[in-house]
Amino acid sequence: MRLVVDLNKCQGYAQCAFLAPDVFAMHGEESLVYSPRAEQEQRDGVARAVAACPVQAITAEGLDGARHGLAEAGREASDAR
Amino acid sequence: MPAEEFHEWLRREGRIVIVGASLAGLRAAETLRAEGFAGSLTMIGDEPYEPYDRPPLSKAVLLGKASPDHTELPRRREIDATWRLGVAATGLDMAAKRVRVADGDEVPYDRLLIATGVRARPWPKEDEAQLDGVFVLRTRDDAVRLQRRMKAPPRRVFVIGAGFTGSEIASACRDQGIEVTVAERADAPLVGALGGVIGTVAAELQRDNGVDLRTGVMVTGLEGDSTGRVRAAHLSDGSTVETDVVVVSLGATRNTDWLAGSGLGAGPRGIACDAGCRAFDFRGIVTDDIYVAGDVARSPHPLFGYQFLSLEHWGNAVAQAEVAAHNMISAGADRRPHLWVPAFWSSQFGVNIKSVGVPSLGDEIMITQGSLAERRFVGVYGYQGRVIAAVSFDNTRWLEFYQRMIETGAPFPVDFPTVDRRPEGRKPVPADFPDPSLPTHGPTVTLSGYSPADRHLVFTPARH
Image (cartoon, rainbow over all chains, first blue to last red; front, side):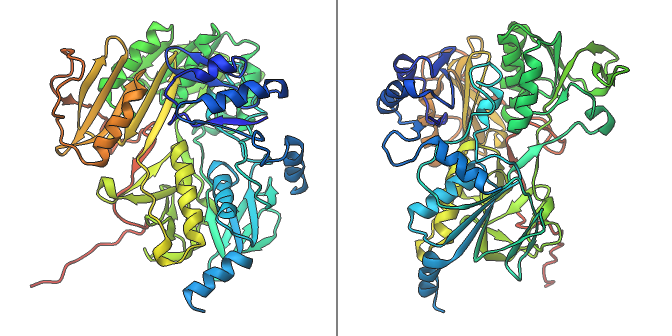
């Protein structure tokens, strides 16, 4: 699953780094380093991180069911070429 | 057709074309659909990839914590667009309302959004730029190439330019134990964006982390070996640095070449637009069917005397795209101005650097919290008696407070000499920005004057 963190909003509370340590990590005191693509098995952790972020800085795709999977997006892009 | 009816028709069955399929283009497309646009939507992008995020390319990717191939942006919603990826827009016919693309096709529009962004400024000497081992870092392909070479690992990486990208690359090298030399024309890193007071801190930060930082020097040439691989860089102080990877981080150039001769107010400084994101033509007359968003735009900001600002900021791309999209399909009074307060971040050597406002407008700085020596502080920039910007090193939670001061035009020097009673910040000191008439590569905000278009006119007032 794809995700992005609005690092203007991020204030380094590190809740995400506790809840999904394979995806989010602190680098120094308050810098966040994250992987923009998380594996399916990390989905629950990411969902918890999204919910727990005090400043709601994390956007992850496909958590609320509003958005289709990655395969479809890939097809959409390749169709266009 | 009356305006109201026209906009109803536009929302129902109009054709919107977005040139630039990156962050701004994608967020604009999502906003259009979210606001009920049901017509046809075409996304044109010169890269063959669907919209991806760039900030991780110089951070998580170089640290080996993410793949350069997988930074695609999550979608906020379905956008039901026709994607024309891997084909650059090559021209614009404003009268016929058509965009020409590289494969010869012409795409008609009722509303056009231009979000073509910027590209990395290459090393100016072409034969040297072609050497194997010389890189820039802006796109996903750039990141793939650089990351492959970083894995080798190189004996030494040589970074030209200590702006944010250059400094982040140096940081990633040191994190992985790779030797790195950084050459910067100014006296310290980040001075174009944050001034010399903060630049001094950034210089110490680099040196303490083992960066071989050379300031006040220019790179006079890159030298290749007999196989065409880069082997050394020559500096203006007469020294030579042996290296096998060179990263050119000399800032960015705006992607407006394709608009040459179109009649739009587009030039090397970007595309001028009004506060509602509508582009100006070259005469300084605002269009109503062409909109601009993101790094390629320059727009007047009420907080900064309506001067035209170009912002190479992630958050600006998102905010401006949302406003542009809304205004494209809304009539007069429903339109909104783009009033985003500039903000950016950088992460290097484990320090979180963030800023709000426009530091480069400031002539003085006061350290109001923490201390420069601890590299944990907030600095406030003043301009003509008011607070114009703030910067934090590992102190981000305070920035909101300072943003409010910027928005309300709070007086400078600030009423409180320091928040935490440190001796350092009691008095403002010169912020020490380089002479604005000299080119610098790292400002991230460029003041581009008052004129809406790039035409040079002399205004002669009537004689009395």
